[in-house]
Length: 162
Ligand code: SAM
Image (cartoon, rainbow, N blue to C red; front, side, top):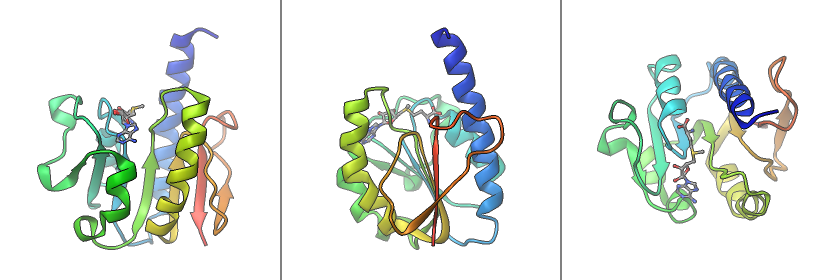
């Protein structure tokens, strides 16, 4: 498969997954944490499908399209490993949804990130809340969820906090 085909599949999967998890958190209070703003595509989609949620974005360097940059109160700038454990005063309660799209495609980086990110997201997710991540996480107090139909297993990982 060409990288173009792979990118198209990835974007379709991200959209379908975000639509799916938006339904799953309907009854769960709390903000959404978007880890990795990047170009702002998934942030823009989350804003559209969850218009009543506060969405906080974590990013080391803002390079998104201007229309997809949140206001300053909703951007937490810096290394996520440094900011995420101390974000509670900014974000308020535990999160209904944490979406982590941080991978650069290097499996070694993914493994290293998995080790430090897993306990941080576990700490910040509300009961019944969802974590959607582009790579696997170690979340023993969560139930792994199936991906929506048609999405290749392993493309994304979904977890629900028990
Ligand atoms: N979901 C985004 C979109 O739809 O446009 C794409 C996100 S892109 C794959 C990953 C982003 O995460 C990059 O902008 C990168 O700077 C950011 N990032 C990766 N690791 C990070 C870290 N440890 N701390 C802060 N930002 C990080």
